[in-house]
Image 1 (cartoon, rainbow, N blue to C red):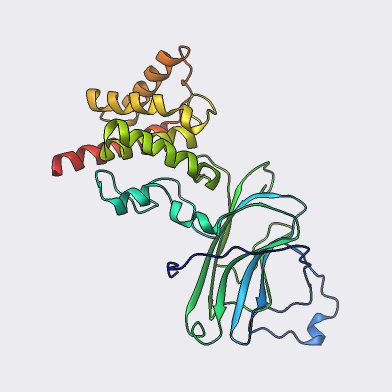
Image 2: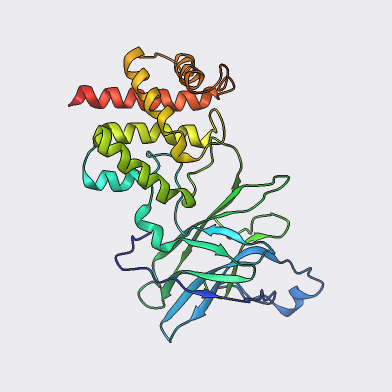
Length: 304
């Protein structure tokens, strides 16, 4: 999707009502096919609102009875790799990527009410008619047999959409026209949530002031892993920074060769700061991610 080069304008519409007679773009249902059809209602859908003869706004609609803490009309990232950032790169451009989409914060909506629509983009009937339009949308909402999850939607349509466009049905099934619709509940798949971005930016600046850009990025990446996997405890992001610093230092000193060696380092750090065995249940997968970060950091240092 083309990166916005202008200031995104947020708009909200209240009391948006789902019309079960709405047709998808390019689809015309025959009356005979409609007889006896059981109408479904979506939990989330896109709705178009005409601006003029050429332009149409696209809104994401929360059709549930719950307030969504955020609606992110962009990709959410788990780590700096997904943000296309690199360890060891001290350029201003890379530092911005490390912040995990902080430059898209103007597109983020918080506290989206039930039956409220939020503008996520627009379509031009001429300029976009032959283009593949794509929207990535993430929202926090329970999944099947779960109390919490993050739903990720990927919509791709030539020339955009028209009318109402369901993203997820009330029985949690995916409409056939949606490219992907998945609920993330596992810690290793959970992204860094937008509500944390401002705090991460503050933590990163503190690291840069203390250790310089290259080391700050390395420590921040470790802190991301600690937070995502709830290593030790479910601490606020800015309260695990001390452990992240110590882990980074011990990695450099001890030069671990495998995930188990990293796990021993993590446990030793948390034993020092808290009680013995405090991080004994640390995921090996989390340690493998930290090992990968350490190996990449060492490779970058050797390349300099």
